[in-house]
Length: 350
Ligand SMILES: NC(=O)c1ccc[n+]([C@@H]2O[C@H](COP(=O)([O-])OP(=O)(O)OC[C@H]3O[C@@H](n4cnc5c(N)ncnc54)[C@H](OP(=O)(O)O)[C@@H]3O)[C@@H](O)[C@H]2O)c1
Image 1: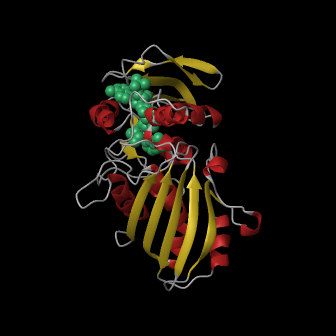
Image 2 (image 1 turned 90 degrees about the vertical axis):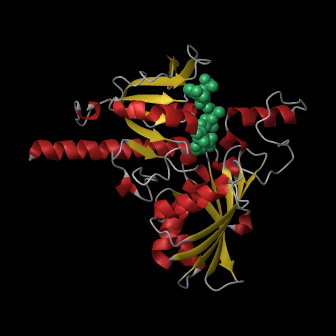
């Protein structure tokens, strides 16, 4: 298998980025370069429309190749962000040619043999397994990073979340629609069913039976899978707002056990991947404009909900293209190669 070819401390890994011309794919290339990921070849792939175009990778420019079933020869890690249809059509080809697939789409997230991973939350699931590791939905990632330490300490019984989601979460065409509308132009190809400029759409993804949107159901099902607790109750209302830079979430939590809001602040300050911004006197709280470009999950407006016993209110913001997508995927890859390297050195030493 290609991943075990020469696993040493200074081994370089050949990486394919599927959907390299999209918002997430471009961010993956940026994050790989920024973090000094131990990449040998980096192979950007997209549809025939973009084949031959150039994408930036650090101070270099890479030529985009057309995605085909044969695109993965010699690749160790394939990072997919071209939508669920492309993942369903091509991920197995990548696995069959020996690559580990890390998939940003919703295609495989709820399959029982596919780990759904957030490295700060459930690093233990990051294993090759069936060859595919799924990256959770962006709104879910920032929520579970915060829920995990709270759940361990006070047991979360129920979560009520309302999102205010950035247009960048819906891809390049969504950003084009917003910018076109702000310039006063009609948009030739609308991404959303209504105008988004100076508006708020209580619809993210398609509607499912029963009236929830698929995004709202992802927040329930993925949270339970990642936290490994099917008993947690989650109800969500997901709203698209004319914002870039990050998703915001108003989160109401009911704990099983009594808590003190100061202890919540201290615990979150000490937790990996979280920055607490909570000083009402200085109007300090998380916002998309300040989260933009960061890998952190920001939490503020931490206060008791006095309408129920053991109730807590929070406001959570994170850059959906970074921690919600690209950074989390690259962190999964980093975690996996550390594990592979350690396993290989153990098997050499025994
Ligand atoms: N945006 C987010 O915050 C976010 C967060 C988590 C997960 N995701 C997921 O990541 C995926 C991509 O999102 P995005 O925001 O980057 O979308 P996007 O900006 O619309 O980019 C889509 C990418 O997919 C490529 N693509 C489309 N059809 C293809 C095909 N048939 N074959 C090969 N490549 C194809 C496009 O290539 P061309 O340039 O050639 O069309 C482009 O590179 C989606 O599954 C999305 O749900 C997004």
